[in-house]
Length: 285
Image (cartoon, rainbow, N blue to C red; front, top):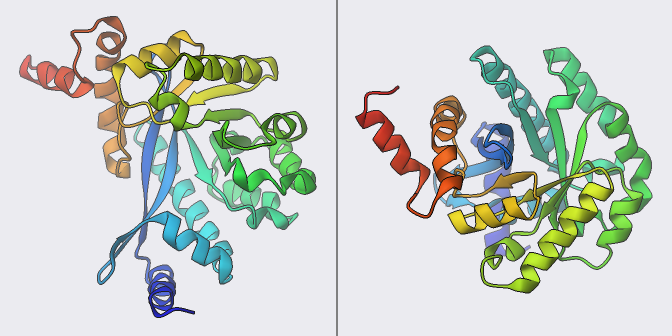
């Protein structure tokens, strides 16, 4: 193992052992009315020596060196306890949680998730498990595990949809509840007729199969309005909100709902943060 990789692995093992990981949460809103429908939990690691380490670096290491189950167990416990804190503060939402295909090789993994939910009193329908499209290539063989999630009321989302080669087959055979349209299509939706056609087609396909369609990576008002017109159900991206620390979600929710009408109304709107500033200056809390 190269020295840099060995250092990274050692640091990650220490981060797991010493609770140096934390979660941030990116809101997803309904395009019909701007309502918060769920948040995506994203793991972060800020190392005292290495600095901020991206999940794209440490998650593959966890998979390769037998640490993915420990990371998944930590993540599941963290988000379920956070859901309880939000509920007690008056915020009742769903949480999407990214899982590794390796975790699904265990047929009893859905039972573990259900037990954790029951132990803490979290309804299973407040959870959505997210899988990247690339990760789903071998998952046809794991139909039983995925189906058991659905039987238990836990949602399944396919992430980064539209960039793989067997997408349609996966949608037909696997029990997904949500399709997340890859942000590469969203980025060019206002400049590319082809992207608009692709988004429209994926959305229509999702609806035809009884699934919801989420637009990922929404960063401009024009993108927001177009994916709304094209029939997407949910939007996620930096225009809506960057990933938040958990204590910020309740305040964000209140401010965003005030801003929503202006966001979809006219070209004069700049950002929901402007509405937040205007609202506070008028003394409306």
